[in-house]
Image 1: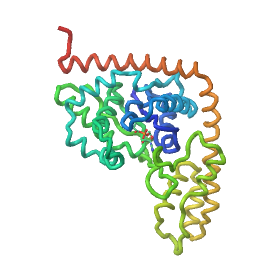
Image 2 (image 1 turned 60 degrees about the vertical axis):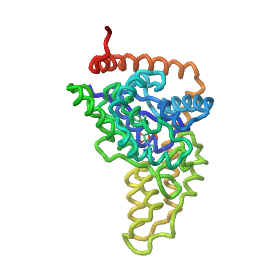
Image 3 (image 1 turned 90 degrees about the vertical axis):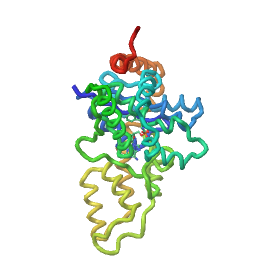
Image 4 (image 1 turned 135 degrees about the vertical axis):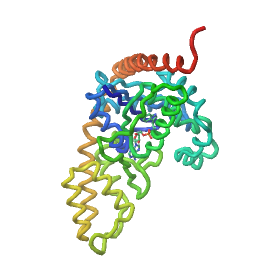
Length: 329
Ligand code: TYM
């Protein structure tokens, strides 16, 4: 049976990018594979969140995972820091990770631009820790959005390097996964870039219907095409990309053909998009509140997930230590 793993950083509430890029795909796979889904709290420490808000975010994200349809009976759901074996594997892998290649990672370059006052080692070694998350369960598939493609490539590189150095095909080379389709990048509603937690341009799974309508209606548009089949400006292409991920194909086709005939009415398109988003988000939002109110349930899910994740991680770590020559005297 194949192993599938994914994770999300608890840096705020989950948005549609997280849901459509990773969570929804994972939910579809959970009954067909050995599945792990975790909350990447070690990773979020790279930006120095305050401890109280980190704790609150972990709780929110766990409730949102469950509300989105992750089933703790079939998938192992855990908090990364409840599995310190990951930190040990990250340390061991870091001995074969070269500073030059880490410095060239797109996410590192972006971060040093964004937070020049806080270029810590955790930022540099972020892809090594991510490789450890994946390799600790020897995962075959990782459902993620397009922004994580390079990190997955590095994970494969570290797996290959380990296997070659120690002469044993121990780690599989994990593949990014989106049901045979291309990985998605959900854009933000502000005209450029991707939907992100820190960008403030997102629709959240916890947003009210009214908030969703307001945000979508405010999305940037232009004055419309003036000749048939005119190439789209980025903000317009972004609204179409979001519609493609959220709305039925017939809705998307209807507005695309209106655009190509220069008959598009952006107001109508945005209204339709907002209603389709609400249809997706409203049932999840209702479950989030219910689940969050049940502290004992959240505690039980995290504790059982941690125990199951540890059983899997221990098997890997025993063998990794042996392979590297770390054994009892
Ligand atoms: P994070 O927390 O930024 O995002 C979590 C997941 O959501 C996807 N995603 C998107 N997909 C499409 N469009 C978007 N606008 C968008 N925004 C976010 C991401 O691709 C990701 O799948 N490094 C990871 C967390 C992580 C992880 C792992 C993931 C740590 N270890 C091991 C998989 C496996 C991250 O920062 O994701």
